[in-house]
Image 1 (tube, one colour):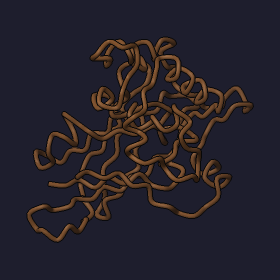
Image 2: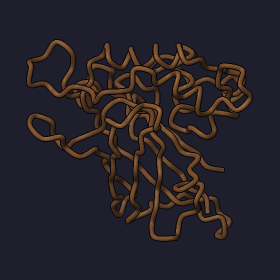
Image 3: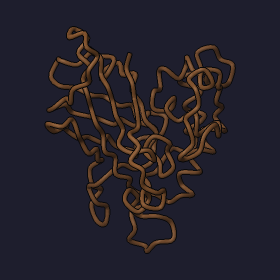
Image 4: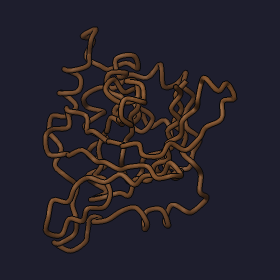
Length: 230
């Protein structure tokens, strides 16, 4: 089964913010700012994914929005940075509303984060080998695709893994004082491809998703790690 595990690096939260955040609130006019997100993002998300029309999104419905699903713990205030992540059973019982989604987006904006460095480790677990060992996957393209309900301003971030399976994912520069380093806050579908080698469940029909934010739980623990089983 696919796993996403944040590697713990043991540095302080203060150090993490210094390393990962550019353009925080209170800086100069030239500081990088977050990309614009739709004012009605929460309403758009519920309208798109609320299959049973009960006005909220349950964990099963969120399977079609893996980026948003990855943010459930923070949306529901179930864990804070450096706390243990909630159990899967707790997440499965959670339901989120449009208002809760919008409240979380306001928290991103309050942090004032413009760009966040997003290091990733990608591994393949060869099911045919039968030993369950994860090997670095070289030459894979990693895409962070913004969930569509966030609006058109967020762009796709990309990176390519090296021989160690490591990649730095960045959105393109917007020019001016916006560097081509890192990702703006958002909910992203993660698509990993290498020719036709990797199964659709990790790309065109991805089950992978991440929340990118200055206080996102997984990023606070270190590089984002994806173990692909095929």
